[in-house]
Amino acid sequence: MVSTNLVTYDVPAASIRPAVATLALVRVAAGDGNFVSNNHMVSNVASNHVVLDSTTTGTKVLDRGSAGEIKADTQNCTIRPTL
Image (cartoon, rainbow, N blue to C red; front, side, top):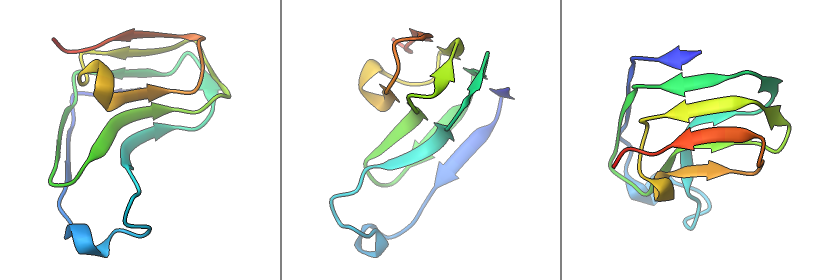
């Protein structure tokens, strides 16, 4: 469970390698029944707020970014983007 946190990423864009990379502020790499909710995420560069790898199942991502800020490599999840 990752809930009710402030996640801040502040690094010079020139320091990101490769330069075209899109950062993940929270990455769920595996597991069943993961829960990511009500976190406030701030980044000074382009980023995905939450990334779900294909091996995750039953993960819930609630109120944690727009649909474009959440990336899921699995269909076995519930996502409710922030409006």
